[in-house]
Length: 448
Image: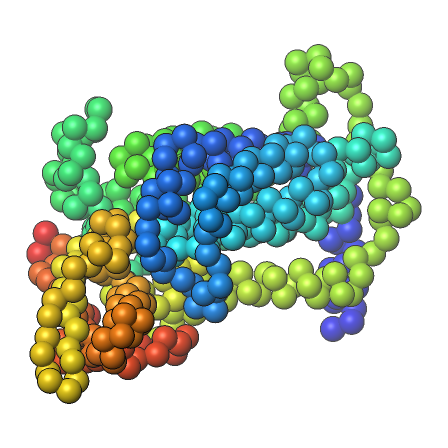
């Protein structure tokens, strides 16, 4: 084992050109500047932090809350500045750490707004904090190479999105029933050129199978030098089409930008030489300081991170039931475009002493978007029940029972009861354990 670890350490310190990582740093920083500015310009900051009265918290992160006005505007201004500092390489390590903390804090405020690329940005920021990519170090020390682990850890992180996104699609709804693409394509038949086929079931199957094959194999095609250019063109085309069809926000652009890490490490240098911005040269070798073997603690830390990234998307196997129904282990697992869920939620409170019941106006607690998202996600329904129960107690109305009538339709199936109406959700405590209080999911095939 010691010999294997030593050989691995030697391989991971083999020098590679730093040019592609510098380009990655610049691209990542600029994408984050664009994302931050876009978020404010489109009014999302106001809608997601100023308007809601209550927020849905991640387990263990109940303390994360928005700053009082105008705190979140200052927060996003700092995010933009630190992202620009990352792009410029100015005080790089401090900038990328601060950006990662600011970004993660902002998007841990309300899980209503969870998106896979938010999680990706947090992961990439964490990885980049350990990379020697600051501008001054590269410029003044004339370091043109870095240990190969710097390149491969970034490739691994970006590759996880595609690979586990493909693994997640190997479910019967996607493979055997072409759902939810059948629903989504039918709603976009006005798409230029190919929209006339979107009502055809065979096209939905072709799109589903092609999507799974793309996710499972694209990293391999990008790593193979002979297919790399064609694969990248296909990747950009794939993200442009899916972004246009499914309104995926910044996700297509972030993935298209970050995928440049799979190109040859020297590609930016070669491009600049071809454009005559640089004279032809070879990367300098690592200095003695930089070529020291990766320490055991560093190798252990990297391996631990890799193991966490490999196991986290698979944790849903620890829970009973269909993950698309229960959504336990669904977040932070690169589950992209797998669910079309529609829900109808009614909540009532009952006085245990008199058994008198009354319906709750969900709009008094949540925004319309929060109501929509909560109606199909069990942990959010449970948290809402506790919000209501605490509100009644705060107003001096005593302890109440909270019951729901939740009807959920999954991927073209008929609606089905999600939670037993007789269950008092105010007495159920949230945990990481199985949600045994959920009713079983549908067994029949989709009707659509």
